[in-house]
Length: 109
Picture 1 (cartoon, rainbow, N blue to C red):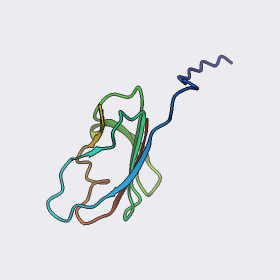
Picture 2: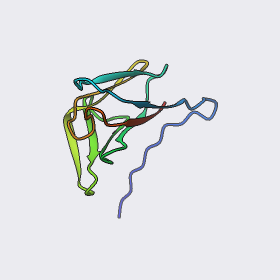
Picture 3: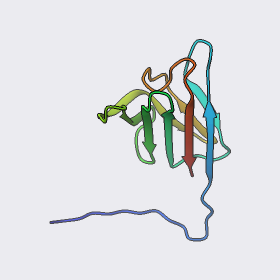
Picture 4: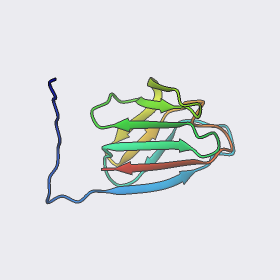
């Protein structure tokens, strides 16, 4: 069995972490979060439905691993997460971003 593993870590660096909530009671749309750093990992969860989207460093922009409450996981290649230089944009995935449903998010950089 062959194992290939890579890791990027600078022991002198500081890990940035930001968390927050988002609620849109109007017409839902993609939204942008400014957290002050370029994230290496983002997780956006719909607290109401328990559906969620995750993006990991190295994935394409506007992509993510979507997990629905029933447990099904799929790779989304549109309407997902795009990192920016100081935050991220969550696309309009209709399972995760729903009008009047609480969204929680976490970003690590």
